[in-house]
Length: 295
Length: 337
Image 1 (cartoon, one colour):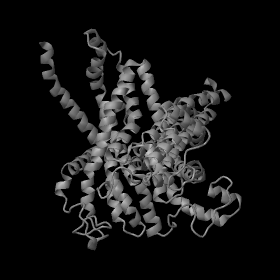
Image 2 (image 1 turned 30 degrees about the vertical axis):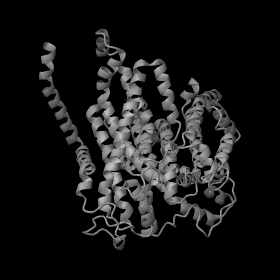
Image 3 (image 1 turned 90 degrees about the horizontal axis):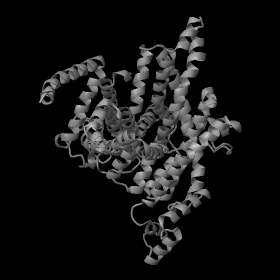
């Protein structure tokens, strides 16, 4: 029973040291703390945004079209008189969901394919490697365009396309991490205790590479948001009047050259902040997980 | 060198096969019945069947693939539904515009990013290092279409320096005779300076947009690789031998530090070719990207597929060139081959 009692003592110490390490990294690089605060705001907007906005994001009021920012409309109104502040906040959920869904999808498929390929080697490795090489042979955004055009112009297909173009990145990281651990002591111990290969993969290898994968997730979240917004900017996926940052920038593009900067600026800035936040968070997480690669 | 070239050419064959298979699958994954789609909305049942036989869609998938490859080899990418023109002709006419813009963006980006990265590495921890870091993180976070719009607002609406974004030339200029297809080069070759100036004014903002986008990875890589090289033994030896700082940095460190930067260019091109599509849309640039976007909106699939295939082949070719360049710069790669 000594095995069972040991963990009950160990975790508090370990947690505390992780916490201390986290605090050290944050104090060393306050930007990470800022990024985390920003992340909480974005997550809040995604969760409760639609319930707290001052105006209906779809209600148009043609008499108040293209008004600059004021007390009534903080970010001004667009060409149909819709409140831009409300639309920017409400759009957070859709952009967030697209990014989270595509990252979760590619984490499940690419991550598993990657660890299987690093752990088993041989044919598994060759097939997975060939698939990622073929994806990498395309300029990624162009491939995403082609996939959405072929599968059909829907939000689900934007999620799928974004997941596919991120596949090689996840495979590469997971493969390298699994490869160095395939003959590690704890894996051999698990094998000797009679665990099957798939069980080892899921219970021994996967938990051990999770920290590195979390960094990867954070870094690709920003890219996923950019990609989805780019696709909807050229008219794929999300359709008007649904509020979405990429589409809103596209709608404001015509106004910007006649001086109505607020229509495109605010959704564009929201998009930029979200991507910036995830990139900084990814860098911060990497410092936390892998001090050697600190920039 | 010939050994290296042939070895590399062998390596791109599986890539090209993969690209062709994927684009074929994309054509066959079209939603609904392609025959009904190509026959048009008013077609009768017989007409649809006729189109199906004509397109070979009633044959097994393997035959369809053989037919697709055969068409490709003969340079046939199908016809656009909206214009009725062969896709290949349209892409060939529009490709120089896209290539000129992408290359201008890349050259501008490198001209800014490489010195910035070098200074950041040489003066590590100074203000220029911090500027470099901010640029590197902000550059990858900025949506390229948003940067383009901001630049258009600042330089066209507020300052009035840039002309309206209406394509490669304003309405008063005529295109120079086509030699390379690049307006900037053609107008210089034929000595038409006013056309050159007009073309330069039009390309400045879109190229700057792409440059800002490509700046981040290049600057970051230059800095990292310069730092590694500056800490190496041969640089220490050169310094200890009393060479002046300029010689050490430019002849010794810089040339070695450029190797990883050139490798990064492959990834930069992947981003640039994608970003190109968005920038072309923002600035109404008549390249293959805006052609594909117009076709996408009209649900006209042949041009989109032709575009994806062209871009993929271009990208494979660019990666080949980068690898060969690597061999030219680094003698060790040549010896290994």
